Amino acid sequence: MGLGMQIVYQGFVGTDDVERAAGIELIRLERAARDIANCHLTIEAYRDQSGERRYDARLDLVARNFDLIPVEHASNLDVGAAIHQAFDNAMRYLQQVRL
Image 1: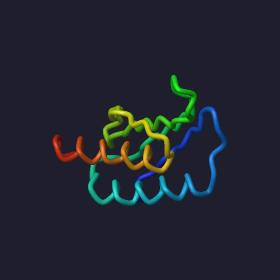
Image 2: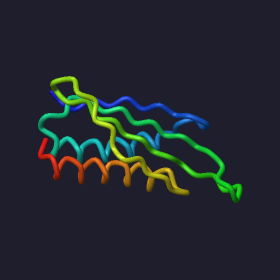
Image 3: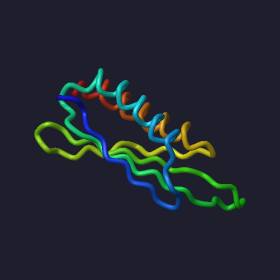
Image 4: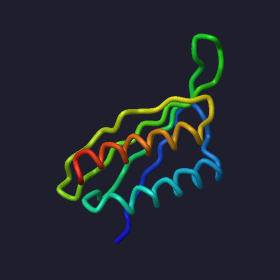
């Protein structure tokens, strides 16, 4: 059974491009995460102090034993880059703990 993912959008409406970017990252994560059953991706759009629109991507992993593993979030002006950085953070974490 494959790795599942829920995506929540805050402050903007998701698009097919965002879903596609997250799906590609999920496939990459699935190959490295034997003991992960699910993940929750929250993407929030907000304005920074300069008024520029930024995206904050937060990823929580759910282990097969139901432990919740929060991953360091990522922020970027580009939503795709924020998603990629969040999944990179998850990959780094998984390599450290070897889940």
